[in-house]
Image (cartoon, rainbow, N blue to C red; front, side, top):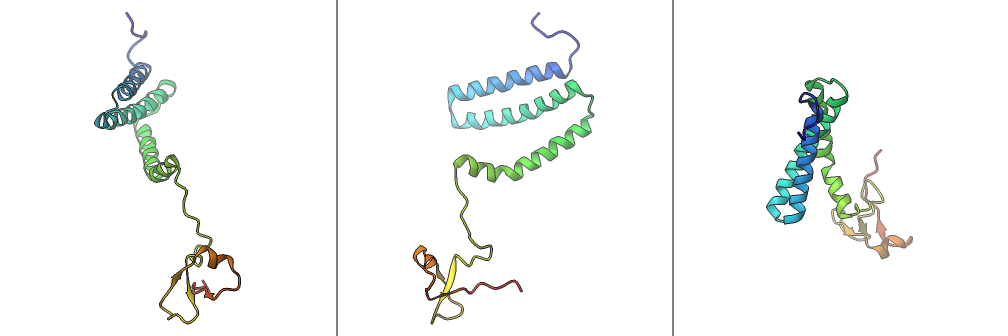
Length: 140
């Protein structure tokens, strides 16, 4: 009586998956238990992927092999981006390195042994006439 009309297909799967995702999010927000957060995350991830596949199948007759390859490539990209996204969400700024060779990090003072370096401080870096010697290897 309450079911959408027609034979079972991608549209029915999409409706069911959206209901499951919304229910999982509602349960996760209402209970706020640590283990349920992990379960809700897993349910939303799996159902979100399946809902995207169902939405594509609703409009185009795409084979399952093509959809599986697209899902695999998408998941690999997301897994590769996960650390970056986590840093964005946590609002952690990456460290600033003025030089790719690291010459702003360590320098050798006059009179120090060749194999010894000292950290470059803010006061040392601003002064043009200091005794720090750049020991960075030149790429020639």
